Amino acid sequence: MTMETKIVSISLDSRSYDIYIGSALLFRIQDFIPQKLEGGSVFIVTDRNVEPYAARVRDMITESKVRICEMMVLPPGEKTKSFSQVEKLCGWMLEKGLQRDSLVLAIGGGVIGDLAGFCASIAMRGVSYIQVPTTLLSQVDSSVGGKTGISTAQGKNLVGSFYQPKAVIADLDVLKTLPRRELLAGYAEIVKYGLIQDAGFFRWLEQNGSRVCALDEDALAYAIDVSCRAKAVVVQSDEREGGRRALLNFGHTFGHALEAAAGYGSTLLHGEAVALGMVMAFDLSHRMGLCPHDVVERVEAHLTSIGLPIRATMIDGLGVSVQRLIDIMQHDKKALAGKMVFVLANAIGEAFISGDVPEDLVRDVLRDSLGGEIKEAKGKWTSVFSSRS
Image 1 (cartoon, rainbow, N blue to C red):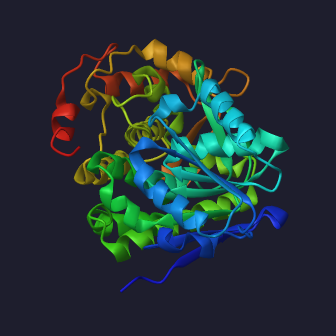
Image 2: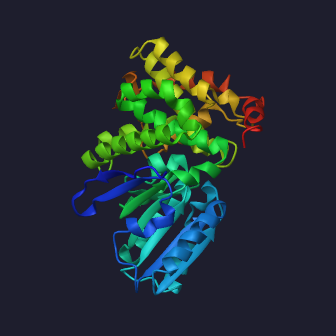
């Protein structure tokens, strides 16, 4: 029996839209597209990992008597979020007949959603797009809220726009083919919502996180629903990240620096970097006298029980100096006047933003996580993952 579809609404006046969460949604995707397809033009953007899903969507939309239905399949991975792919994708859509009333469907993980959303925001000065996230991470985070963009040599997501989709369609069934490592990486973003503003949700995750990661339908749907509702509240109050929305960057100042140092490849996934970053954020908070050490240990215990890394020493091949990470963080887009900005916590569920953090304590946190000034690759985390991929 198919579960009832959950609907989370993002209320942003003329930019409002709904998030649909449920099973077998791709088989009736037309029901969730808030514009007439007949006679129109649809451009599907996907990657090789989820091409079979995208092809089925293309076939169904073609049957809707659209005038144009084209699909571009891009390489998977963070390196696809680049200027060269923006030029390629925009050029392809224009060549194939993109018009102001066209619809772009982003079918894939966060990379595809960010890239396709950015191109939709600039092509023809803005065309409609819909997010169809196919990873757990993108279903609870990157597909929601209208952040789009690409990365550059200087850092992650430094070029982009705030551009809301017309809908988000999160089909739980597509997660069944997700590699275990990708699934756990997405779970880290779910934990984030509990840590920043919902201690009760974090307690629920401590009891039910293993069910979520085992793709128990009820637990999974509940976790995604709570995460999307939490993000909706924040986005509605601060759409363009002028204040409160920055709370959603919890763990990301550390995490993005580690991702950049790792080269945005398979060495360190985004969700793994966020897990490491959240532990570091609590460690930093403790060193600043904001929270007791048992809070740090509680966070570490839960992430460890799920199978996420809590120390950078667990990441094989991450040979990087503390100074290199500091340099990256000082050039992060969240930095203000050259000062690093962090999301800290007084307790689980009580996070706040601070631009007044002693650099020496940041260095201490990094040094401890790296196992010294320069981390030596020990292969621990790779050996664990080798049985999960």
